[in-house]
Amino acid sequence: MLVAAIGLGIAAGFGWIGDLFKDEKPPLYVSGTRSPLAAVTTVPAPQPSAVSSAPANLTPAPGAPSPVPSAGQAEAEKQGISYQQEYLCPWKAWVVNKPPSAFGSLPVGKDNQPDPALINDRTAADPGVTHLVIDVQPVDSRPMLVKELRIKILKRSPAPAAATATLVGLQSGQCGEGPATLEAAADLDGTADFATVRVTEGSSLPQELADGRTLHIDLRVRTRACDCVWVPEIVWGQDGKVHRTEFRIDGKDFHTAATAGLQRKAWVMDLDTMAWSERSFDESILK
Image (cartoon, rainbow, N blue to C red; front, side, top):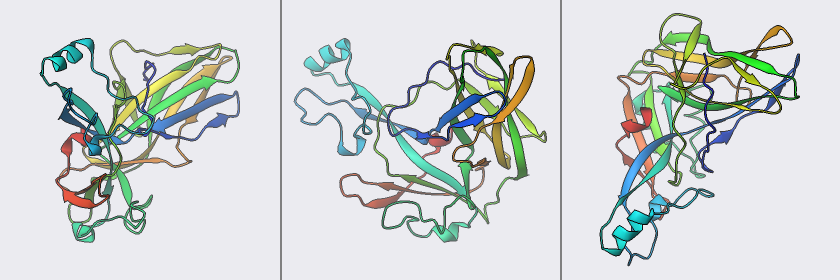
C-alpha cells in the first residue's frame, strides 16, 4: 500500500536530495529527499520593542520563510500581549554500534562534522525511524498505474544491545519552519520479508499517473525491535505489464535500528560561539 500524499514543502536545510534514476523498461523516474529528525522548540515571540526577530540560536534555516504573525497576533502585540512561536530544530542522530565508552568526548572533527572513525555507513543506523519523501513520475504521456509501495527488508537482526551500541545525537543546524504533515508509515517489526505501508485517511491506491503528473510519497518507517536494512519497492504497471522499482539515495540501502535500552549521548552547538556542549538527548525527535 502507498500514500498519494499532498505536495510536501520542505524548507531549505530540512532535506537532502536523493539520487534520480531511470528504470529501463518502461521508463520511470524516482527521486526523493531524506528529512532529518527535528525537535519542536517553542519560544516567546518578540515584543514590539524587540530588536531581533528571534534568539540567535533560533535563526530560521537559510532560505526558509521568516515567521510572520497573523493579524490577530499583531494586534495582540500592540497591546503588549506576547504569543509563542514554534520552530523545528534539526538533529543528526544515529544508533552507533560502539559502546557508550567510545563517546566520552564530542564525536566531531575540526570541521564540526561527525567523526568518520566513529560514525559512518558501516557503524551507524537511523534511530528508530527513517523519514523519506519519494516522488514518482513517468517520463512520457502514457498512463501508468502505481499499484503498491512496500518495504523490502534486506537484512533483519536483533535490536542492538546496550553494551555494544549507543544512541548519539548532534544538533548543529539552524532552526526554521518544518515539513508538512506526514502521510504514511510502515513498521519493520515482525518476521516477514516485506513490511506494509499504512496509508493515512483520504489516500489510496492504485493511483494513475499521466501527462507529467507526479505522485508524492511522504513516508516514515519505524522499528522498536530490530536492526533492519531495507529499501522501498514501488510496484507499478504500464501497457499491461507489472514492474518493480527499488528506491535508494546515493545508491545506499536504508538502515534503521531500535533504540530501547540504549544509553543516550547528545551534544548541541551554540550558534553564537560555535562551541559544543553536552545536553540531554531530546526524545521528541524519535516520535
